[in-house]
Length: 460
Image 1: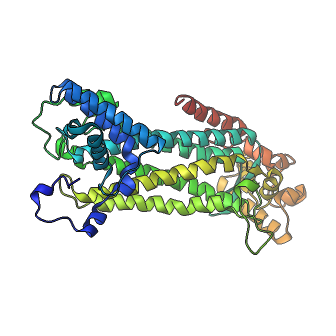
Image 2: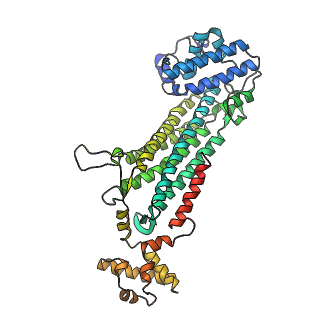
Image 3: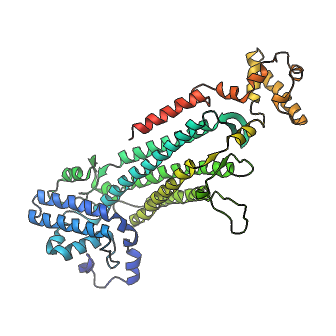
């Protein structure tokens, strides 16, 4: 088939330009969206009397046949035609004759691809959201099982104060909650139907854009034809949301990488989600987490690609916009791949509770509670802070913990100390006492789990 624009030119397009210009190698994945949009467009053309109803029926039946053949694998696209739109139009024309040539009436490939990509992104946002919700369920389940699993909380990667593993997991659940909301906001904001914008200035045909909108399940039609064909804000919003999502699961991956090392040994990954070494037989490597951590930068790159591509494009459509698809597809594919392996890896991970407890008993993570004890006995906090600092210095020097000190040793620093100090600095007491909203007390973590579970229930 000659190029659509061949009548204007006196020479064939150079073969290297054909290869450079072609997008069929990656936009072929839009075939379902392209066919769906074309069927709605054909139905509208018939409804409006722009083409005959008989031709509409032939076009729709022909498109259904092409879709069926593509899905069964009996039909393949040809690299002879540069994109998915031209492939489908050529196949349709070969099958049904001149009626196939009428399908492109009152539209351009510019608004056609704008429609296809929006349909695709809408579908993928829902798929990614479902994967995030599934992981949130796994986080809630782990939190419920570890309401009283005491572990050190860290600041500056130094043992700081006692928390629970359940509390830790709910921190990530709250991150995921924000990720879901960002995806939902992206979906709501992009729910505009661009078909009818034409190449840039709409059309003189009496089309019914609202009919097509309803057929395709959009909330609105785009309000400006120039913007309709050139808008890729939603691609940036999606890759931005996915970058933040990837950052969150990368942070968790980094924690798990540290936790399963012998230096921490807080968790043990299931053999099915670990790898070994080609030379060191003792190794059990957290490659899944490391790959998630590495692939996060890849999604960031996709976001930067889109921002850089769009920053200098004048209205309306420019060929630069062809570069949107590979970046969007890669970000989507990468995020989905990571989430699909993260959830089962996390769900099968063994929590080594005793090791967490042993680590929590070291590092003086109950020092703040010791200072609070003195404050509640009447000592100003800054004086209490200094007193406990002196106690810690003594313990470090003598290789003791605060619990190892005798009451007499405590009283050398303050008469406020009494026998109840030991209960006050017990890790269980320290955690249970932090029952303010958002704290690590088991009762409070249960409430947090309830909030997330209600959030999940609303989205079923």
